[in-house]
Amino acid sequence: MNAKNSKKGYFFIVDGLVALVVLVTGIIIMGAIFSGKPIFQPPYDIGQDILGIMEGTNISNVKIDLAPTIRFLFNDKRIEDNSSSVLQQVGKFYYTHCDYVSKADVNNAKLYLGYANVTAHKLMRNIIPNPYYGELIFSGDSKCTGPVQIYTTYPQLAGVALSQANSKTLISTRRVVFGNIGYTDTFGPYVATLNVWR
Image (tube, rainbow, N blue to C red; front, side):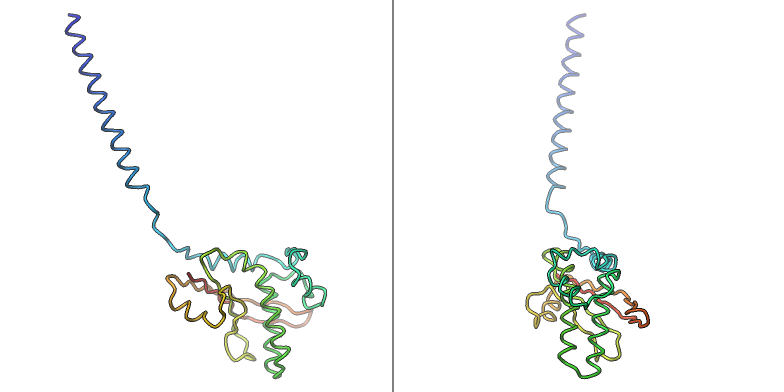
């Protein structure tokens, strides 16, 4: 009787080892199949996120010790209300830029466009991830003849349109911007368009 029971024991041990080998082999094969390079999926909400950050960040939250250009705008009284969001402050500079365009004062128009540029630059250059490029455009003021490019992270200003045309992914996001200038004037509504491409 002992010899019969010992044969049954060997059969179950061999059966268990075969099952273990099959399971380990299956796990190795499945791991090899699913551990390849992940498929690239463009983050379609990146524009919403960036404009949300610009809309939700007040100028007062920008550390002026790390941003000498913003400090200059504060000291020079170009930024008067630090409770505005970064996007609203860019809208204020766009409003003043278009006002000078309508008066044919080219020098002051360029100056305020530069103020809008450095205000957007401080935030956008830090939040647009590589390998993406970004472009912020404002439109909607009848005093300006068309959309105005406020800022771009693309290194060659003249090649932005060509770069976008040849890009693999181009995501365009829009937000409406409006607010107060001082206690009596308002600006907007303007359309802020953020193009992000790769």
